[in-house]
Image (cartoon, rainbow, N blue to C red; front, side, top):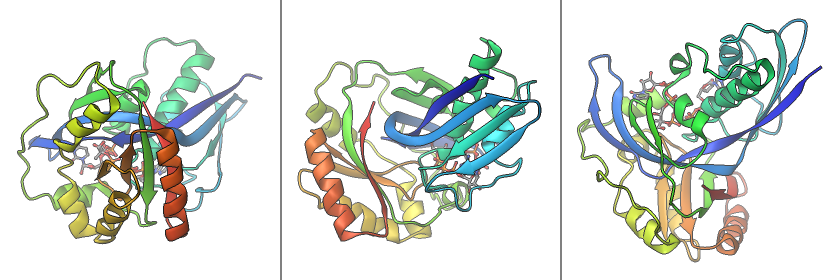
Length: 276
Ligand SMILES: C[C@@](CO)(OP(=O)(O)O)[C@H](O)COP(=O)(O)OP(=O)(O)OC[C@H]1O[C@@H](n2ccc(N)nc2=O)[C@H](O)[C@@H]1O
Ligand SMILES: Nc1ncnc2c1ncn2[C@@H]1O[C@H](COP(=O)(O)OP(=O)(O)O)[C@@H](O)[C@H]1O
C-alpha cells in the first residue's frame, strides 16, 4: 500500500485588491499571497474502494460527504483512495482551508498515480485552489486563475487570530460597495528587507475588510487586539475574514505576542506563524 502525506498550509492574503466584477458575478482580484507553516494534513492511501475520514482538533462541522473539497478533488482522479483529513485550521475563515486541502489531495494523488499534468476540473473546485497548488509567495489575479510566483520576498513572522465565527465568502463580496478599486503597482517589491516589505504592505489594502466588518463587527476587535501587541508592525484581515494577522520583524516577537494574545483571548484561535 502506498501512503502519501501532504501538508495543507494556511493561505494568507497579505493584500487583496478587488479591481472589478465579471458578468457572471465573480470578482476580479489582485492579491499578494503567502503560505503559513500552520495548516491541515492530508493522508492518502491507495485502497480497493474510496473512504474519507475527518479528524483533528478543528474537525467539528467540516463536511464528511462528497461536498468536502478533498472528496471533490479526489474524484478528479481515476483511482480509489482512503483519505484522512486532519483539520487544524478553522473553516470559513479567509485562510483557504478547504482550497489548501483540495490542493494537497491533488498533489498526493498526482504523486501516487505518477500523473505530471493537473487533472481537468481543478478550477471548478474554487478560485483559491490554483494558488494553493503553488504554495509559495505568489501574485493572484483574475478571479484566482492567473497566478505567478513572487520570489525575492523575505519571510514574515505573523500572529494569526480568528474569533471563532464563520464568515461566508459570498456574503462579504455581496456587501462590498465599490467593486472597481485600484490594483497593486505593476511591479511588486523584490529583494527588500523585512521592515521595508511590511512598510510597503501597509500602503496596500484588503478591500474586503470594510464589508467583512459590516457582516461581522467582532473583526474590528481582532484587528485592534493584534495592532496593540508589542512590536506589531501591521494588522490586517486575510481573504474575506474573519482571520486577521499581525506582522512582526522577528520570530521571537511573533511567538511572544501570540502567547500574550492567547492569555487575553483564550476562546480565539491564535497561532504564531512563519509566512513564505
Ligand atoms: C476571497 C478569497 C481570496 O483569496 O479567499 P477566502 O476568503 O475564501 O479564503 C478567494 O478569492 C475565494 O476563493 P474560494 O473560497 O476558492 O472561492 P469560491 O469557492 O470559488 O467562491 C465562493 C464564492 O465567493 C465569491 N467569489 C469568489 C472568488 C472571486 N474571485 N469572486 C467572487 O465573487 C462568489 O460569490 C463565489 O460563489
Ligand atoms: N476540506 C474542507 N475544510 C473546511 N471546509 C470545507 C472543506 N471542504 C468543504 N468545506 C466547506 O467550505 C466552506 C468554506 O470553508 P474554507 O475553505 O475553510 O473557507 P475559507 O476559504 O474562507 O477559509 C465551509 O463552510 C465548509 O462547509
